[in-house]
Amino acid sequence: MSFFSQPQIKGSRPIPVAPTAIRKEIVRSTSSAKKPPFLARSRPASVISQAKRRGQRVAESRTRDTVQKQSRKRTKSEHTPLLSDSDSQISDTATDPPRKKAKAVNDGPALEKRQLRSKPAFSEDDIGSFPMVHATEVATIDKPAEYRLAFPQELEQHTVQLQYPSASQQETFELVDPLRSDDFKPLDDIKETLGVIVDHYLPSADAAAFKDDSHGLLRRLKRARDKKDGPAYVSLIGDWNSAITKSRLNGSIADVLDETTRLNLTLIERILTQTYARTVSPRVSSLRHYENGTDNVYGELLPKFVSEIFRKTQLGPNHIFIDLGSGVGNAVLQAALEVGCESWGCEIMENACVLADLQQQEFKARCRLWGLAVGDINLQRGDFLENQTINRILPKADVILVNNQAFTPELNDHLTSKFLDLKEGCKVVSLKSFVPKGHKITSRNLNAACNVLDVVKEKYFSASVSWTDGHGDYYISKKDSSKLRAFSTRDDAK
Image (cartoon, rainbow, N blue to C red; front, side, top):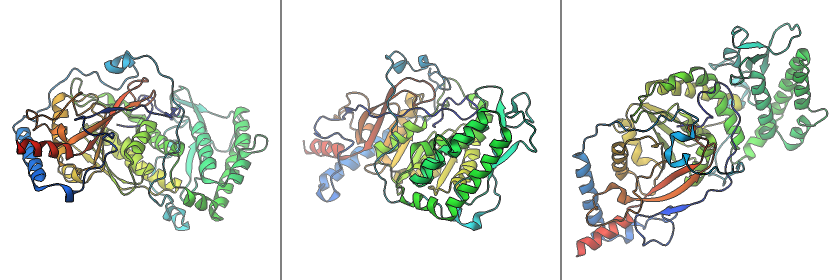
């Protein structure tokens, strides 16, 4: 589950617009609480009576006994594969009227103090080569059926070296244009990369000089490209490299990063887009090899939606994030980059796992180029119900993401039972609710695993997921056993 525009597109894609506001609808397991359950705090253990604790142990024991008797075999469903643009593939959102796109939201609440700048990447000792996928490995004139030279003039060489904000190596770009509009565009990648660096790495006065409409370097670079003036374009890239190196050496870039408390979504998307375009896009066709009618169906959550999830769940740098069914690792990488937390993913589809490993390696190189420190990344292969490492980390998790849009009811039930082992206050984000609508705790359903979850229903807006441009619902479930304890205590007292 992930973050890019439709995965069949092979190059950098336009960044979708993110929402300004999300409407809430509260789904409660009982009607006794006055506050939304997502905001409510569990009562401290010191005020829970011995009877309540005994009641909770009995209830959860009954639930686990019930679950252990169930078959864990995954069965087929009639869900439609999610690797598509068609709105008609999701029945609960396709018939809804179109919604206006929300305005982009780039700034959220300040996170806990975090070191954004990678000090080793700004050390002169970092100069040297390291493994990465250069743009010229994706787009080159050596692929004449796909690319042509961008400048008709005779140049000594049709490549340029681009300097990033850190002291790390430069990236090699070949000056070519794609023959197909949806293929990777190296000159667009350069333009967007320079714009992001100017906006987020330079002091305001320096940034204004670069963006000056008459004589700014960005304007002159665009003019050279529009006029097909290859020599001028190459010369301006050299000017950029000198200027950005000077800003690094005089400490102005480090000062800006050290004063930054939260990465802007535009910067996050630029790094993730570069990573994806160099690893997943050239091999995206392999993601179509899914098993239709099973749980193994591929679909991605896009970056603005994932960022909204991080804000809603208040994911912080000292937290643990887990993506169950992590696909090519998009959300896992985004959590490590945007929040700086320990980030885990588990995926069962082999093709997606191969691409996730490629992304992880390239992502680390990209962050080194951009001079950013990120959280630890851990990608696991296999069934997340059976993976022992995931089972060990799950009770420590603070936020869990599950794109269960196409999961069978049996798999969702097994997942709900897994949530009994979560710590109090852990939040589970899903596209289908793990608590049935209108559910209330009764003596007859005391063993139901969903009794320990309080759920808030949220709305995501257009351009949030890969399988439809429409809007839809998602759910934030918080582990809160207080209501089950209270009911069990009353039930035992009768």
